[in-house]
Length: 326
Image (cartoon, rainbow, N blue to C red; front, side, top):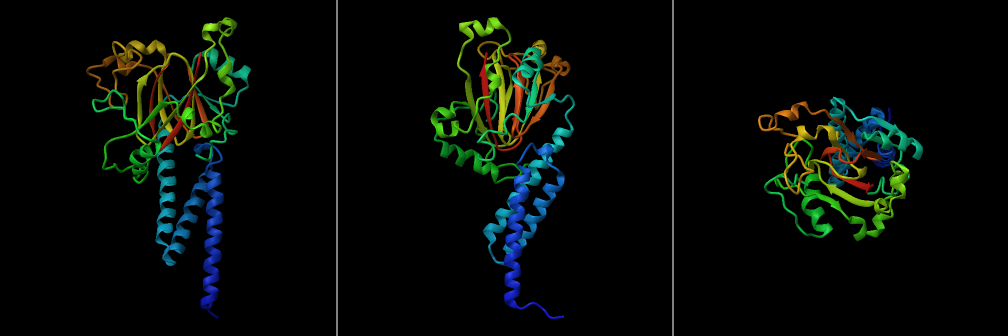
């Protein structure tokens, strides 16, 4: 049997690398065409296999930087997907889900029931999809004025360089929270679409009341894995829209307030309990507080009723947009 000559081997290697790059791109698109949990595991396996084979080709050509980048992307897909799927499989009281309801259905089945619901399929037309802090109860929490470039360099990129199971050498976590980002970067605001649900009112008197005719408040939430918003409530209707990454949320109805030990004074809308590490001796009733929970993924929006307590933790580098209205 005749063996391939040097030129034939070079040509075969080039074709193979080209085909693997194409396969990697195609599977990457499949991984990002909807919610993670709705993507068949075969696509994740195909992406991982193509990445490993392409990395071998790059290593043989001594293109080490591109080889490491390829394996790094595989690691991120493996780590992020496994951690989120594992957490979601262990949810005890999951939030209900509703696929892209009409305005009338949203008002009747969501708004008037005053219960959290995840809306699926309502963000597929957002241009932002596919493009694009520590708890403030801690003693070392602080605010700092900085440019967006400095924020990314100090808090996002170093965390991206670590895996989900490893710890960064810098314990500080930066969180761009409740920020009017789109006033500062209008071009980004054009990729964020205000959901039509935000025009809905609970009653005709609400719609006719000039005092309730306020502008919709739009805020950005951007930070690395591990950023936390402690257990608190907001006075308005809230649609939390997940653009990048995933978040874990636990939610408590207003009727559970006494069991959540609100802070006295100006932070009365914030609980004293640290949900991730509750002190049951200091806050014994917290054990009995009923809750629901969810993993909110890219392309999903969570409706949070007024005065509904919620705790939020980022499972990966995350970018969310909240819309508050009354």
